[in-house]
Amino acid sequence: MYAQMVDTGAKRVRSLDELSPEERAFQERIDADIKIEPKDWMPEAYRKTLIRQISQHAHSEIVGMLPEGNWITRAPTLKRKAILMAKVQDEAGHGLYLYCAAETLGVSRDELIADLHSGKAKYSSIFNYPTLTWADIGAIGWLVDGAAIMNQIPLCRCSFGPYSRAMIRVCKEESFHQRQGFDIMIRLCQGTPEQKAMAQDALNRWWWPSLMMFGPPDADSVHSAQSAQWKIKILSNDELRQRFVDQTVPQADFLGITMPDPLLEWNDERGHYDFGPIDWQELFNVVKGNGPCNRERLSARVKAWEDGAWVREAALAYAEKQAAKAAKQAA
Amino acid sequence: MNRTEWPLWEIFIRSQHGLAHKHVGSLHAPDPEMAVKNARDVYTRRNEGVSIWVIRSADITASSPGEKEPLFEPANSKVYRHPTFFPMPDEVKHI
Image (cartoon, rainbow over all chains, first blue to last red; front, side, top):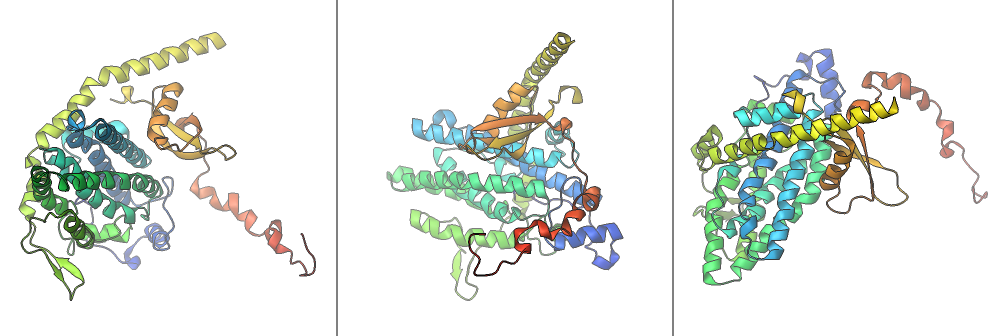
């Protein structure tokens, strides 16, 4: 979801008997729920997959600041503005926790950022949609952060120590994000007919992309199976998506707005909501770079990086000068 | 490219008076003063701390996973270091 379709390099999942003694000892530790720490031996594919997954997650937090940052200057009240700034600042913090977790695997921050800017590394497809009205800020908190929590809570139990610890920190802070979004939706839905229509319009536009965040059905995916064996994916895409639908529909009922899905219906037999087919072509298109805002998002990141280069260099030059001065005084 | 990458710092936060500083994560900063300022923003946005320590990651010496047995195994056989090793008669109090 925040990490979608992560390639594990695996052709098929091997059984314990087929693994080398080292790999087998590694898998047995994972099966026994012992955390893997950065200095422990790990298969190269596990390391590479985690770098892909954690960095994709980090990039999503950072790129995710853009659609919401778009409304900071136009928040309807000073209170809403302060809250939105705190939320966007949290996203920056989450990105930093995750970059640090990825760096423990032996990749540098500059390499991670270069991969984002070159398009080699991905970020969540959801952030390539525009935020057209204030209600979109409500819908993002409610749906997008809601979907993120759904995915991140199981990841607190993932096998890699630094990733699991970062997820625990993130989850502690994330529920404020979802509540502030739902609070915006409540206020709009209790407002004028125009405000309620604005909330409905935001739901119409964000509902399907939110469901796509969980990624394509992964029943047949060898990467998902490999990630599950390594315990860096705890629940399947479809399980998470179903949980999200089940938890969110009653919330929309409370608001008095409806999901843009004529096939959405409670299924007594399954004990879950049934929902209509998802347009996977749209997801693949957005992931490929053809969503409404892909180019704008990436160019905003590249510009911020390039415009900040002189600051990074100057701060480093100053630190070096101070260190040299201190060394000279000590001598 | 690497010339401009700021060094990595490990961050320790003391949450309340009386508790020890605890490792919370790491971040990049050009010098120790900036590391403290950045740590304030990254790791104490919700009153998590009353004190911050920063130390360059490169300056940390750590035990390696391979040393686990020689380092920690010897303690396993010394159960008498725990008070529960010594059963006390029920009628003896305050011990």
